[in-house]
Length: 428
Image (cartoon, rainbow, N blue to C red; front, side, top):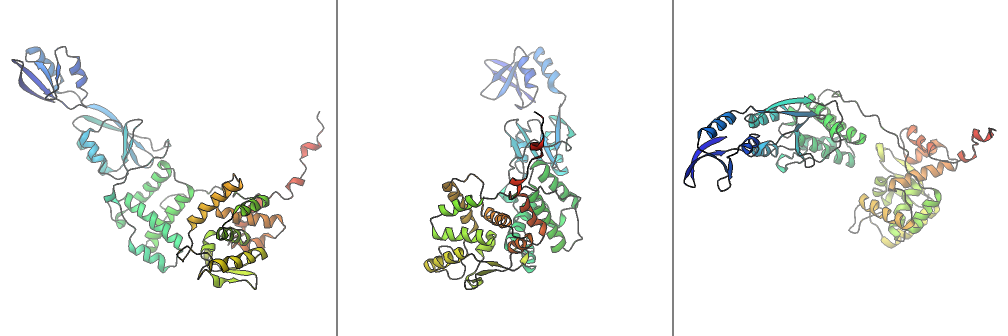
């Protein structure tokens, strides 16, 4: 608050310049003879002893006490107006967030950030802290990321992934996740990030952003790969418990629904794609990477090379699938892969995922069907026909038989013949 003299309407006045967020404004408004001078953005008081005494009484107004809340995921909630200078500082940070409903800001809770914020607000506020990291965040939210804080995954990581022959999909995921991780810690070099910082980051993802179990596992794997495989560090858990995976049953189509779907497909290429995925139980990546040289029409089989886990296997071709492939290859004349894009090369997974939704709607199917649903349906239909789980495991390329056993929880064959014991009770 700054007080000066001003000549206004042939009189001298006290002119008070004060920040609009200062809580003393409420006291100024209660003073009978105060008035707002809009032209100069100042409060005016008659230059007399009464005004002088009043201004002196509020000159050393005690700082307003505010309480900042430390949230789960090491986030700090700012519960007061942080001033224009404070807002400028907040917006210089990555991963800041403004809640327009409750009018508060949150930023990463670090010693550097709190020290800087306190130095900005110390003239107006006395800041206290409440640690509520044991309480669950209400909901996830989007954070603001400045482009200048973005960090790419180091090239050394990409070289190591390729040298160890990781799959293309795994390489893509690790590059993306490590880029996100290093961007979060943009103020540090990767080698400077401590185990505690990693643990705090994982708590932030799980507790505040409420990431899925799969996302958490993939992020942990990517971070461990960098520090253990690339930098050659010791194996670490970072004191992060792996999430216990939920085991939802996969969505499957009945045989009738599968027929409805395939009948709704008029495009020959699309029909071939869906038929091969279903009748051979293929993963979408296996279909996309299936080369003509791996298809043996005379022997009624196809060779799946380096499927998941880099395992090869042979899959039998159904007669209808074989005839469809012959018609398709004669019309489209693919050069290298069974299914190719318009300009040659591999077909894209996103295209398959897109058109299968379209055909499901046309077939009147309300289930959430993906290309992998056809693989699940194929396995379930084999089990319903009495095929041994051991053979189904080989056909699908599962490394562990427990993965295949999930289909025993889906099939309804035999269940309809089980008599409910209640039917034997006579209690009427």
